[in-house]
Length: 123
Picture 1 (cartoon, rainbow, N blue to C red):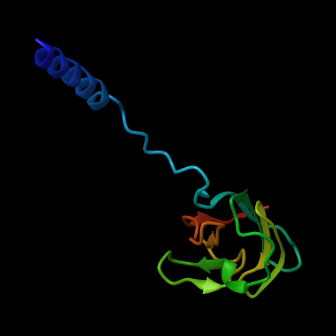
Picture 2 (cartoon, rainbow, N blue to C red):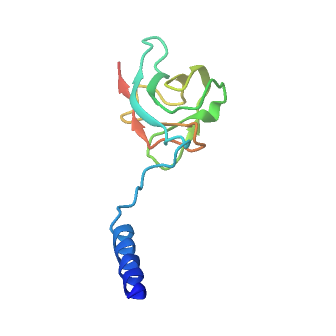
C-alpha cells in the first residue's frame, strides 16, 4: 500500500511539473538588442547629419563603427563622425545624405550587437 501511494504521488508531481509553461524571456541581467525608434536627417546645411533615437544603444562613445549606414542593406559603411551618443541617442555624420532615395542605419548596442536596419527620414 505504501509503494502504491508513493508511486501515485510521484506521478502527480511529474504531471504538475510537465504542465508548467516555459519562460522564453531573456534571462535576468541580460541587455536586450538595440532598438531604433527614429532616424532623421536634421541639419539643413549638412545633409549627412543624422539624429537617431531609441533604446539600449552603447553607452557614451565616439567610435565611428557604432553607427553604420547603407544604401542597399548589404554593404555597410561606418559613420564619418560621432558628435554625441548615449544609451538612447546618436548624433552622427554618415557617408550618405538626404539626396539618396533610401539610407539605412544601424547602431551598436550594449549587448554587443547591431540593431536591425532602420530607414532614415527627412526632418
